[in-house]
Image (cartoon, rainbow, N blue to C red; front, top):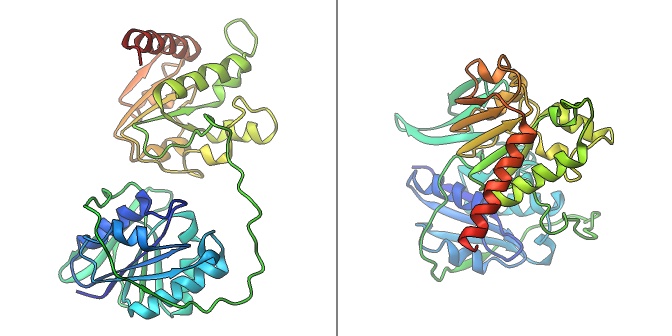
Length: 343
């Protein structure tokens, strides 16, 4: 088997996040000589976390300059780790941090890169990857002869590596960093309780533009819609998605939800999440939106139109009902259950 390098960046607490552990598990299943390359302010805790993963070496580009995502430092660190490991195949989680850096690193090393990989396997003695093309409409299995080969694995396609921590021996690698012209002045985060994108949630709740339309009384009810959806998210811990039409309204200053952004968009021009269950409300089930539900295992929808796209084979269950009334009733039931259980 070829020399494998798993590239991972540490989280704020110095450990490995779920995407990194998923990429590690995918690489460990291939066998062969496995090296783990770490980038962060301090890498020992992350190395200890993966000490019993079967890796034969732990390399690290560490220091305060690697604490924050920055192209110049991350690219220098990744290049140095790849050269130190003499890696033929580099596997990394498809995080925003690596996705913007590794294509450039592959060019520096005269290699090749594939992003949004959903599976890695050895077929007929050769390494092969699976990925989607044309907005997740076509699936392809491909292999490459050019090395090094950089493979960015999508989050959620592999189980995270799980094992006991140990004591790993970390080899520090010096990265030649050119002039740093970008500084991180601070971090902006949602106020407590307003985080709506939850990749690990069991349920994805997608809101459509129907929440902004005139209701049965001929009036719009935007404040009520925001309160109902926010209450549902708080009670269920669901992740919030949106149709393109709704986030476009948000961009025009007509947001139903004060915390709705284009990051919530699901579909052909948005994200393709992988939650076990999905519930769409006030969406019509158009193809550009539904394509983002390809990996949702169980799909349900609430819509007053019995002939909407969801009812044409795109959802497992369609509730022909008023979403305002349904979500209000569900929130009330959840509140009653919470009061009864005392939790």
